[in-house]
Length: 379
Image (tube, rainbow, N blue to C red; front, side):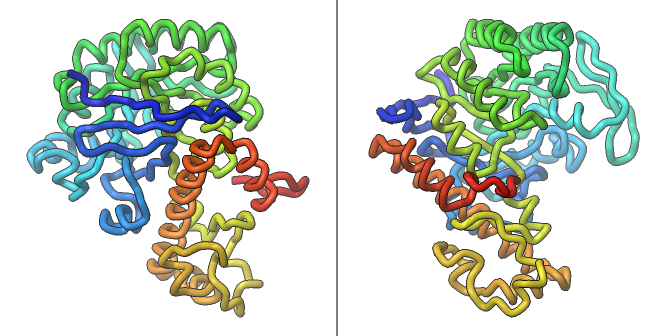
């Protein structure tokens, strides 16, 4: 018995995008979906009740950060992550690999695992496929990620090939040491950078191991959008049609639509809450920096076409005032709005797939949002 099942409901005739459902031990969710990120067992400034209210399904937590604080044993004693954070819907945990490579100045990669320093206090730490599985089994997430190497962009073909081969060996070790396969689904991560032959190699290795789902890793790491789209075009067809496909770390509106068109079912990113803390919001007419002086006397909502709690009740002028004064409520309102915006966008994407018109929807959205303008400001 596998903990995660994917049901393909429809393929968009216009684009090939997939409408589906992912079944987990904590509920079933429509795809393509955006998953809010709750790094430290909380989506910053949002309560679990608010996340449900805006239509969140699966949310993410971070293995590396929870291992350091409060410690996976404490989460296990609390009854697992769901109990600990009072979230009765599905949770995905990443493997900790990305944080090891992005946060630590000192790191040494060996076949056994990675030696590095705790980014909080400098202590020496070691993370391996086995340790990542031990932590994630203790956290009790519905979806776990295999421990992989996150190579930098750009990287040489030679380096990337060695990295891909190591990631495949680590994936096999993850499967062997995963102790709860019947109630936690483990996803493999396809790497290979921008190299088609290496993506093929990685996908062949991982699909032969028959994971319940697959992620495309190593994108959204600084490469141009057209490179990401090209890599997805040759990578997603290599993944099984009866398993969920997850594009890691992607959350800008244009990339969510372009990813869905290229066969992706699941997305996550800290973007909506991170930019919210700087007073930046996504609106139906493009990116808006509400803390700018020109909004000081603007008594309209963040987005006149949005029906979220923030837009129904508060003005740009008021939210600007809160953020300028470092009042937490301002950040709560911008975070709420941005997450609502992306979850609504995915609802519209699913509807467009249902109606076989995702290509038309993309054109309309890009035009309205301003992505087609030469001076378009991207995220």
